[in-house]
Length: 355
Image 1 (cartoon, rainbow, N blue to C red):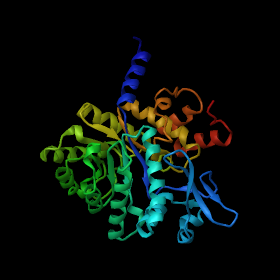
Image 2: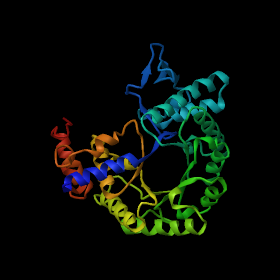
Image 3: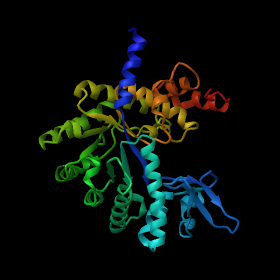
């Protein structure tokens, strides 16, 4: 076996073991008002289109209260926020309509390869009691149809605890998203409910500024997990992916941290991250995301917090990054394109076309 075949074999093995944490069932998510999933009817009513569990065309309405929000004025519709709030405040028929929508979206994630379904309701309200009610409803609706474990995602451990209290354990070990140095008490929930958990590289008071800080923060958390008897096989490490458009070092900060931690801990833990975060604010995001997945696999990552519907893992793992347009993305992600100028120039000149 030559060197290139060896690398290909390793990547194939990693791809087969790659754990996808499906991130789409979040109340932050949007569809565009001028996109294909939004439609304005002749009477002026607006609807969000989807295919239900039977594959039939269906829709949920965009309510009047949402049309008064800033996201709506900016051309965005937060479809999961609408579904969750309309469900917990609506009548039985409305609840059934919203449940149908959410369950259809959950099944799309599973069919696309999600190993966990990540649920987040933090943006439904600033009121904790409403957030808890929303999480309670969402967990129960999703697990009615899910065949994979859920991931309970919140920056508030009380909301996580609410979600965990509703879990059907027959789906497998639930995942907590996440534990950080600033909220070590979330480890108590890992122990109480016997879950898997994501631990993040965030510091106690600020985000890490380089690869070393990421690894140092994570190692402190891993020490605490070991002290509590939490098995490494139940841990996913999120080394934090930030937009490359903000700082040209953010790609290599993550990739180098992956390499360091993999060398330090071996294969016992899963290394993950919100991989699509890297492309935020840039055109042709799919090119960037696919390239970054390939680079992350090569560095040693074996999980991703991604939308599997938008992520073709097989394609990403077999990309030739020496060819356009992905070489523009590769150079940018490896810090060789300050301010992303070459990538943006290539976009403006029509060079970012996938053949």
